[in-house]
Amino acid sequence: MDMNKTGQLIAELRKEMGMTQQQLAERLHITGAAVSKWERGLSFPDVSILELLADALHISVTELLKGEKQTDDHISAEDAEENIRDTIHLAMEDLTKSRIPVKVRRFFAPESYKEFISKTLLILGISFFTMGGIVGTIDPESDGWKLFRLGIVMMFIAWLMWIWCITEIRYHKKLMAIGTKMKATVTKVSQYYFSEMPFQETGHPYYIAFEYVIDDHIYIGRSPLIWKVPRLQSRNVIIYVDNRNPKRYYMDLELNLGEDKVY
Image (cartoon, helix red, strand yellow):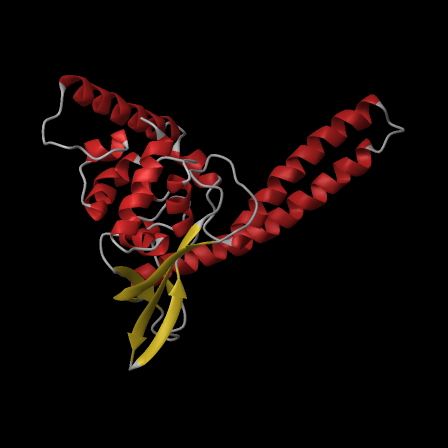
């Protein structure tokens, strides 16, 4: 399996079909940046998307893995074994990622900026609190206790923000119970850009933009942060809308994508 050969094949076939990187990406419900990385040999398509990509380029998965088109329909035993090994290798990479407990992955996969900032402050606060306490105990004349107090302040702010997040989570659960359940039309899948986060398949989270119609009025919305490439089964998603205020809504990620496709 050669990432450069596969990337060159993807670029060649895409251009032959008259597609841009963005158009191919939209067919696969991923970003143009991901296609660009494949074509430059910087990464390899995820094992779960190989079949979709092969179909989009009108080639077989075998040709995609080998990075070259076959001149005949015959597959040698050596090629078949190599393809199996390559697929197992890709699947094992995904399995290694999935071995991280869901709760741990969920902690490092916030659904909003408020949750992201809250958890970042909590981690930094605990670090400063611990480090400052140790340094201050060893050397009372140092600035360790200042760091210790800073850690306490950061953890307090994180706690206040977390209460805000919990209030929002409860509201979302209430919406799912009494709100209007309806379909929304997906308009695009894109990425947010901010600092790298650990335990993630990509460095930046995705979001799904959509629109929904109530009383002939079009409303625009976005999903919570998604930490994997969203693989939508259709151009519609299920959302819950507040009956009293149609501008307020909630899109449940697990309902639309499944837990394994979110974290």
